Amino acid sequence: MKKTILFSSAVAMLVAGGVAIAAPGGGKGMMRADANNDNQVTRAEMTAALEERWTKMDVNQDGQISKADREARKAKRFAEMDANGDGGVSQSEMEAYRATRKAERFAKADVDGDGTLSQEEMQNMRGKRGGKGMGKRGGKGRLGRMMKRADTNGDQMISKAEFQAAAMARFDKADANNDGIVTAEERQAAREARRSARNKRGG
Image 1 (cartoon, one colour):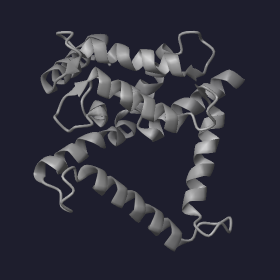
Image 2 (image 1 turned 30 degrees about the vertical axis):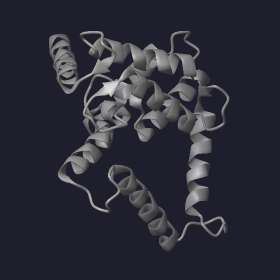
Image 3 (image 1 turned 90 degrees about the vertical axis):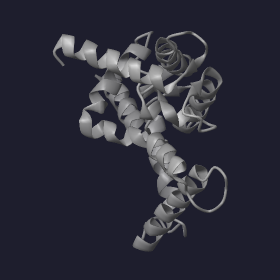
Image 4 (image 1 turned 90 degrees about the horizontal axis):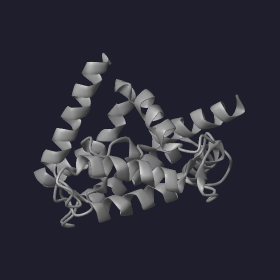
């Protein structure tokens, strides 16, 4: 029971974090790895994105994702919001925190640094944040299944090796011509293949 609770907590944390493993080959979520905004993802970009995501998720740096990381992540976020360190978050502190996050997202989306977002930059920004919709459409259960498959040794925790292997397996499956690049067309084909498989299973 204890291990099950730990694993469920880890899955919940992954859902909240919009982890890249949720969507390689599946559209918007994978585009988080598209560092140069060319609407395709290379193996190198995917590897780098996974490394960055893992660093953020493994908060206590013990080499695995567990309930301890989730609690540490929550504590870190609270500390960032509690600007004056008084142990409470005021409305002004919360608004300031949100404003800072929005500014950071804007700066990252503004690839050419001109202080405005072009239509292409806006589309790329929406695409990279598309993982949020997962929770509203049953994504949590789907992600839970993915994470269980990633847990190859059955210890109810996810190691870095398991995390990377599962994500890269999905990348390789989407990379139909094995050229180390997943294009928009390949992502669409992978998405349609999964949809067809779900329909055949009746879900």
